[in-house]
Structure formats: C-alpha cells, structure tokens
Amino acid sequence: MKNRLSLKWFLALAFVSFGIMLVIGYTLLSANYFINGMDTVMARNLEQAADQYLQAPQTPARPDYPVTRDWNDQPALIREIFGAAPEQAGVMYKELERSGLGRPKAVYFAMRFHTPGGDHFVSHKISPSDRPTVVTSRPDNSLRTLLSISAGAALLLVLLSWLLMRRVARPVGALGDWARGLNEQNLSQPAPDFSYPELNEFASLVRSSLSSVQQSLAREQRFVRFTSHELRTPISVIRANVELLERLCAQSRIDPAMEQQALDRINRASLTMQHLTETLLWLGREDVQQLPVKRIALDALVQELVEQMRYLLNGRAVTLKVQTSPYTLELPEAAARIVLGNLIRNAFQHTDEGRVLVVQKFNGIRISNTRAPAGSSDEDLGFGLGLQLTEQLSARLGWRYSNQFAGDERLAELWIGTPTDADDHRQI
Image (cartoon, rainbow, N blue to C red; front, top):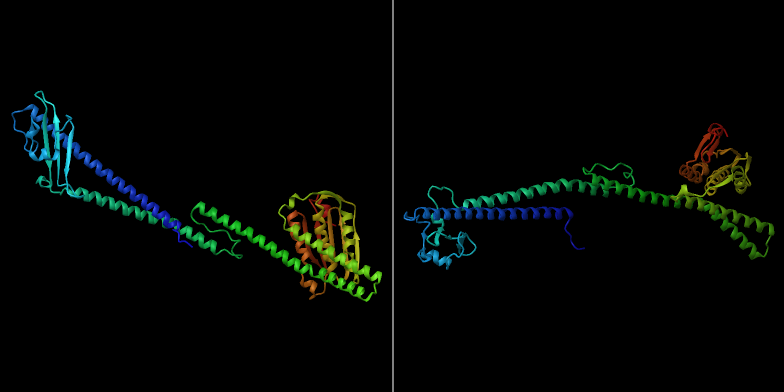
C-alpha cells in the first residue's frame, strides 16, 4: 500500500509552512520599508543641499553633495554610473554598484532641481568606507538583527505548532486506542472524556454504531440458539414419521388409522416449526409498534390455542383445566398468538404429571403447571426457551408479564395491552 502522510504530520507541516511564509513575507516587507525609509532620508538630504545652494549660491557646497549648473560638471564616477543626466526635476535617481548577489559596494544618488537661473544637479555617494566615525554599530548589524528576529519568530512558530499538535494529537491518539480496545465487555461502559466536544461526539457515534452491530449479532446468535434447540424435537418427529410411512409403503401394509396418526404428527410438528420461526423472525423486527391491530375475543383465542396444544399432553398423567370469561379488545393478533402460544406450549411441554391450569379473566391470563422434578432436563432448560422469547416480546409490546415459582407450581401471568381496571385484573 502506498505510504501516505499522517493527518498529524500534514497539519504540522501546513502550520509550519504557513508560518515560515509569513515570517519571510514580513521580513521582506520590513526590508522594503527600511530601504524606502533610507531613500526618503537621502531625498531629504539632497533637497536640503539644493535649498542651501539656492539661498547662498556663493557659499561652497558640501563636498559629499556636489551641486553643479551643468551635468558634465558632476564627478566623473557619478556621470559614469548614471550615463545620462536625470530627466525629471525633483525626482531622486538611484543606482547600485554590486558584484553578484552580495551587499552593494556603493549606492549613488542624483537629482535635477529648478532654479531661477536654470536647472541644477546634485548627487551623493554612499559606501561602507563613508561610515561616520561617531557611529559605533556596523551597517550590517541591522540586517543581522532582522534575520535573527525572523529566525527566532520561525523557531517560535515551530515550537507553538509542535505544542499545538501535541495537544491535539494526544486526545486523538487516546480516541484511537479506546476504539481499538472496545469489546463486548466494555462496550456498555460510557466513553471517556477526550477533551474536545467533537472527539466526544465522534466517540459516542462509534460506541452507538458498535452497540447496534453487537445487538444485531446478539439477535442472530439468539435466533440460531433458539432455533437449533427448539426445532430439534419437531424435526425428529417429522423424520421418524416419514420413515414410518416409508416402511409401511415398502411392506404394502398401510393401516389407514396408523397413516393418519403419522400425518397428524407431521402436521403438528410442522405447525410447531412454523410458530417458532414466526416468533423468532417477528422478534427481530424493529417496527413492533406498527403491527396491525384488530378486535379479538381473548377468551376464544385462549380456547383455540389450548386445543391446538392439547396433543402435547397425550400419554401424560396431567389434568388440564381451562377457565375463560368473555372479553374482547383491540390488539395485534399475531403478537398475542405468539406470546400466549409460547406460554401454553411451554406449560404443556414441561409438565410430565400433575395439573395445568389456564385462567383468563378480562385481559389477564394466568397459567400454572406442576413443576418438573428436580434435576430433570426440563428444569435444566429453565422452563423452556419459549418463555425467554415471551419475556422479550412482552417487554417490547409494553405488556405486563411475570413468571415465578409458587410452591410446587410454576406460575406465569400476563396482562395483554393496557389494563383499564388494574385492581380487578391483578386477581385472575
């Protein structure tokens, strides 16, 4: 994979580059102002020399500012450097004598000015040898000072950029370490403080996204676990009865009654598989509150489900008693069938002997059954995985549900929908 510059170093280089450009820019600007200031001072000196000549033409001019009526009377070096006389009056002309890119060897100035007697010329030359003796500092000290200030400003900017990047990079690195260390155990813990609101918001987004993924995986794992456990029995019933029918057909001894019993077992097993599959798939849906509702006679629904599950008690010493009272209400029919079907089926499946009591009064249903003997497989199953599904479904629907031991019985109570008379419904 192509090596790429990290975001941290990219920002650092961007800050440093921008800062160095600013330092260079202001250095050049300062040098330009310095030169312009010196030119202004020199122009003022040339004007003063011209004014002094106008006021006292007979007074000898300063030797370093020669004033002449004719350009040819100016020093030969001045005429050689400029070539021709200045054309515009009152404008200072400047020429530099340099070799290479180093400091100029000398700077020459010339200016034309008007007088009542005609145009005159004044000139001046500056060179390192012309430095006044009273000035103790060297001419290049100003440039060195300017370069030193610029270098110091650049170093300070680099230091500030490094400190800034360190201040930003540390919480960003901590965020990366925290995200890499997230797992199923610490995902439920709150995210730490990463100093900046943007990083905290990003951490919350990462945590919520991973939590959503974890919940999806948990639903899939639960689906596989429930399915693999609950579907083994109906699949075994179907396979056994299919083999029975195949043997009967091979022996050409088909007993209509036996054939019908095998078909009934296959049909009931397939219904059980369909019911469980619908339960698991419905539990994984997100739009539970948008299920269609219809007006249902709750007592008739309980009686219907009991009849559908009655075959589970065949061959067992179990007494079944069902008590219902007329009551209708609006609710999601599919959800009611799933929850009640799980409660009734689990009570029937996990009762080997004793009794099963199903009572419905108003919108409350109570199902009690004799507990399985201690140490049995039914007890190890925790009263059936179907009850775990029922608890999850009831919680999502907002229905009140409880499941507990009462002496030697297991007691499950369910209030479907929102009770309209809670005091009466608590006693089913």
